[in-house]
Image: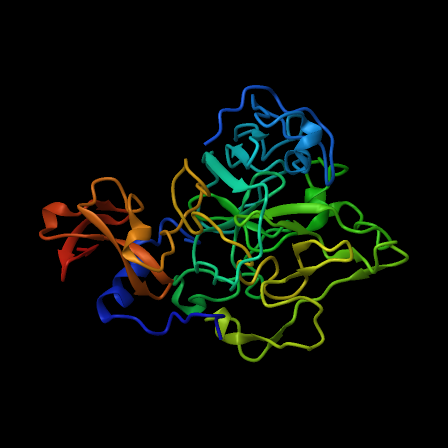
Length: 382
């Protein structure tokens, strides 16, 4: 079952409306002022545009050092803009901006085109393990890779019906780097060789696998501020050997649809990671790992994530493609599309999400499939 919350308990109106209302958005602040140079764990510093480090020297911002330098990468192809990526820091915040173009050849997998889509992320530089984990939003951003591309959870949206909410990796709808397009290009899993500073080539998936005797570097960041490493890790603080970490989830059903119902995490099972797909490593720090098995990147948030699942750009955690996740109406201030009369928190097949409120249809904004209309105080497709 989906950890901590279910998408099965749904008011009938939102059960119908929410997948349609947000289909086009899902699979479907600091003041930096100097450019970030290269270097650091997991790859060179971010490149391809102006950026800065408002929190001191780059040596004091290992988060920014982890990002790839895509300024000389081949990019998606002759028909697309060159990728841009900047990574900067203030004393408390790690800030990333991207134009959403991958640094390697784009292979169309879905009918959705690849377009430049600005992404802006702000995450804490000092993450703390929360008292309780938080479920991932069913749609939208949960983090970003070191090339700036957004990370999504391990399920698709409600369309096509024959794969509704299914596991996109299991269903074979990912490119060789584990990405595909909806509103923008994003990942549901991570292929380490595609995110290596040594593989800034047109087809990095054709490169040799990463060395099995070397611990994986950081290849992404969760919106709660915790790093995401590849699957290989030192067995102890002295790194006397390297082991592959395993997901603790086991397949109990058919992941073609309803992925979260097809897997279950088992404490003390064969996997070495917790329900969020992370653990405290040999050096005493908590972090996530990208794994070969479900949930592939993250299973929940171990820390506190701001803006998970959000659409649009700007603000903490921006750059997502789904409705904002929420627990109460106050979480939804300013979270609905421009033109909304109001915004509230409601249960849906995507979990608790922010939806536009209304008194009449004149209060409703334009939706991805046309003008929304007011029904029972909520804006839905007409």
